[in-house]
Structure formats: structure tokens, C-alpha cells
Length: 269
Image (cartoon, one colour):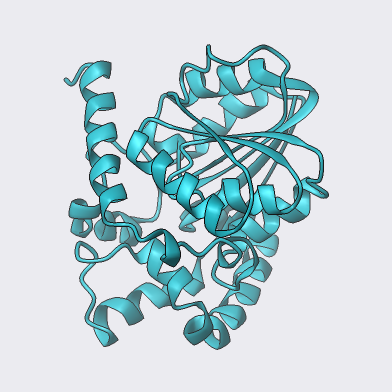
């Protein structure tokens, strides 16, 4: 069994290497929160409401889509990541969009560099399945102001077809990932006064079949979760219809949400 130190080093090295391949000019900021293939971001921003003047901490900021988008809405944003390489990308993306984003190398499980009750919002995209969720949520709760909110979105563990895809995509994923399970929701409810969540990508996962069978893009040769953003205009007519079907199905049979690709969660301290 790997030690925590080994896991952290592997995550840092993986994301540093990824950062070297990113062209900051190609990072799609608005599209990641307003496009038809970004339903998680759309729902989170709608649920959080006006961000102007809010002090926001982003965990695992990656290329900075979230940090820069929120800064463009008038928020005071600090981006954190294990990868110093990724944070350099964040700085460049922020400069391209003419906004200011503070950056700090930090683990989502150890936010000791930040004071208690200091942020209005903590945001993390595609992060929880890389960390000890309980430790991360403890830190999120600590740094949030009273009545502050946390917002997250991550993949769900239970769809067997998606799990096959994950095995095929091993070259673009880290080996210690653990998608969100149904029982993990207890960790949120134990720590926060309010927990809201929604699921996305059920029948709309047909887009993965398109990438694989029609476009002939192997899951390990390109990140499907990035392709859906870069190909948003092309995919919009198909995805929009299937997204509407998904929300109807989940409303009628909520249990099927756990067979979706992603879950978005917003909590209140």
C-alpha cells in the first residue's frame, strides 16, 4: 500500500507534467461555466448566485478555469494546487483575461496556511476523488466563514460502463483516484448544515460513444472531459437534448443519478 507521501508526490508529478503541455491561450474559461457541455459549472454558479466581492478559495485549481472565471465575476480569488506548474499556468491565464488571482501551493487536506472562518466560498472541481474526502471537508469547513458555502463536482463511482472507460483511460488519470460513492454523501451531511446536489451525464454520455466509435479517439490519447469543452459548439445540438432527458429521468427516478458520470454538490456551513 502506498504511503500518503508517495500518493502526493505522484499527484504532483503527474500534474506538473500535464501543466507543461498546456497552452494558456487555449484554456477555455467562460466555456467551462456557461457551455452546454459544462452543466456542473452552470448549476454551481446558478446555485451560488452573485460572486462579486466574495472571497473565494479554489482547491486543486488545475489550469485555472474556475479561479479566473470567478475573478472575472468580481470575486477575490486564491487558487491552490499541489502542482506549482499548474499554478504558473493559472497566473498566465489570469493575465490573458486581465484579472488578478492569488496563488499558493497547498494540499486540499492541509489548508493550515489559511485562517479559520476566512472565505465566503471554497470551490473544487474534479478534486475530491484525488484526496481523503473527510480530511478535505474538515479543512473546508474550518476555513469557511459562518454560513459560507462549499461547491464541488466530481465523477461518480457506480456506472460499470464508465468504469470500463476509466480503465481504458489510465494514461490520462492518476492511479489512486476514487470516484464519489453514494455512501460518501454522509461525509458532507455530517459536517454541513445544508447539502444540495445534482447529477449530470446519463443518456448524454452517448458523446463518449461518439468520441470512441465515430471520431476514433482513444480514451488514453485525449482527455474526454476536456474534449467536451473544446468541442462544445459541435456537440451542443446533441448534448442539449440528452441533458434535458437526463434531468427528467433523474427527477422521476433519483436513484439513477448514481449511474451518471458526475455529481455537483453545494454545501453550507
